[in-house]
Image (tube, rainbow, N blue to C red):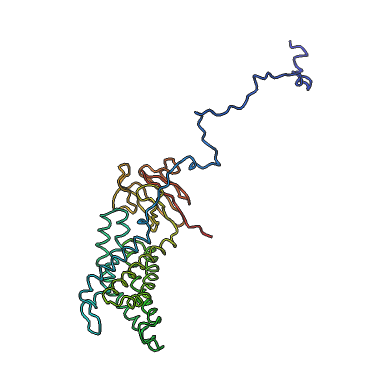
Length: 352
């Protein structure tokens, strides 16, 4: 039978607790991490801070305004070289007078169509785009030439009525510039169709028109400065082609909203503007972003899909996001992606 003391339980008083002493050896002390200790950081630290990507200096050849400007200038010079032998100064006209502008527009369109693929070293894609740009340039060349001639005749008539009787009057220069904006628009149309993007074409038309307009304004002053018909036309048309391409590149870059900037790799410094709803990356030359000379990159290594404001990366091959393998991810501004020896920074235009 239990005693009365068993039912009362154990009682611990404050005096009992105060009398308890803890041995110093039992107190845990912080241990400094050794050189071999792995530190994984906290949720407040991004994984990217542990990834080191050497920043490579980009080549000017990979800047859109540069290669488009060069393509426009070379196309214009080539067109002038084809038609100049049949060009006649004065009231008499020959075949060169009729075809010089359409031929220049045609070859500028071809130049704009193949330039981007050429700097990306995708020869096959450049040939395909060139084959499409040729008939397109011929059609646009003759149609837009007639449009420009009509506009120029109307504006020239208005200039003469206002008292501008010679080509030394700046009003005539402006009239030519406005009319020749049509030539730049033709190049932008071809650029968009070959690139399979309406937005790319819109930016190309805007930039091309601005550039060609500037070149047209300067054309007559150049003719007056050189005094030699053939030379003045060569220099003037070269300037128009250059200004058209540079204008297209600058406007395209200024108005872009989503793009991949190549941080490291053979194309370091190049920006790939994401125009299409689906952009493919891979070792196939027909890929939207052709990644060459890397055996670890698959033919269709990854795709970027755009649906409204959502930009999704879906990877078939190995893609690292902030140093970690990723198969799918909704991209955010500043994301660092690695594909083989290439590193990309995803960028978005900040919206107010």
